[in-house]
Each structure stands twice: as structure tokens, then as C-alpha cells.
Amino acid sequence: MLTTAGTVIFQFFNVPNTMDLMPRYNIAPGQEAPIVRIEHGARRLTNARWGLVPPWARDRSIGARLINARSETVATKPAFTSAFRARRCLVAADGFYEWRREGRTRQPYCIRFLDRRPFGIAGLWESWQAPGRPIFETFTILTTAPNTIVAPLHNRMPVIIDPRDHDLWLDPQVHAQEALQPLFRPFPADEMEAWPVSRLVNDPHNEGPRCLDSPIE
Image 1 (tube, rainbow, N blue to C red):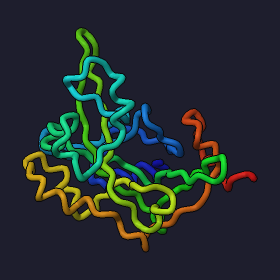
Image 2 (image 1 turned 30 degrees about the vertical axis):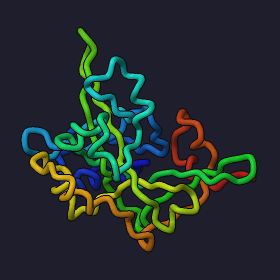
Image 3 (image 1 turned 30 degrees about the horizontal axis):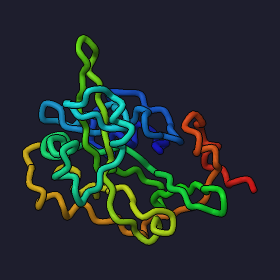
């Protein structure tokens, strides 16, 4: 989810205003989303498709299976090793969803900061190209153990990078897993909240503020 005004996002991530940002209430795997990465030595905001496709992939379908990467093993998994060393990014967000099973249904919850500020999720990006076709850019997000807000909903949560560590995470000259591993801790729960929202978010075609409505019994 990314509903914060573009001017605030550009300032928060210290990137130039190079694109129009429309409010997104239901960003789902397989869709494009804004990421921050280093290009020619400077930060830049651009769009990429959620679901990483490694350069060696035979086709793009593998992206559906690579929407997440476990932070504990990301440095050694063949699909992620190269990107972890040199193509790290921040996925711009101000909230995310998790689901809790309630009887025969799964109830979505929105998780965000109490002050509704934006944040950067640790991500990796890659470029893939079929012969004679345009370059296709994709990303995956890193996950870690949940904090006490997320734990009742799911056994994993996104790795949220503290703004003080954005430069370290994005620096393509930093390769050592030991330097980056401390960034993968769960974000403190006392700064976050979770509440049930409309089941409209179960369908990635649904979009708009109504996704955050209270669930209808």
C-alpha cells in the first residue's frame, strides 16, 4: 500500500520528482510498484514488477514464485545471490496486509505505523530480457520474523529498513552479509498498529480507499 502524497515520498526517500505517484491501496504480486535504487551514483524512484525474475530464467513465470525472500538465507539462494550483492532496493510503502484465518474465511488486516508515515521495505531488483524484447525489471521483498503486532496474523513480516540505514542498504559497494544482517530485525511493534479491513483487498483488481473500510459481517 502506498497512499502518501508524492511530494512527501520524494522528500522521505531523498529522490528527485521523476514520476507521478497515484494512491495505491491494494498493491499485489504481479503488479508494478515504486522502488528506490541507485542509478549512476544517485538515488532514483522507478517502477518495477513485484515478483523477481533472475537474468538466467527461461521465462518470466518464475516471478510468481519469487515475491518474497527470507532474509536469513537470501545471500546464499541462487535466485537472489547476485541481486543481494549489487542490486538492493527499497520498496516504497506506507502499509501492508496480512491475513488471519477466522473459521472458513481469511480476514485481511492492514499494518502501518501509528503516525501513518511512509517506510522502505528491503528489496532486491533484477533485469530480464527475452530475445528481441524490451528489458523487464522486477523485484522481491525480504521478510523476517514477525513482531508482536504481526505475529497473531502471520509468521513472517517485511523487513522495514530504518531511514538511518537507507544509505547502507542501497550502497552497491557493500557486499558482506555480515554488514547487512543486522538490518533484518523485526521493526519495533510499539510504533505500529493493525486492524481488520474490507475483504475487497482479497481481489487484486479492487483498488481505492474502500479497501480500508471495516469488514462487513
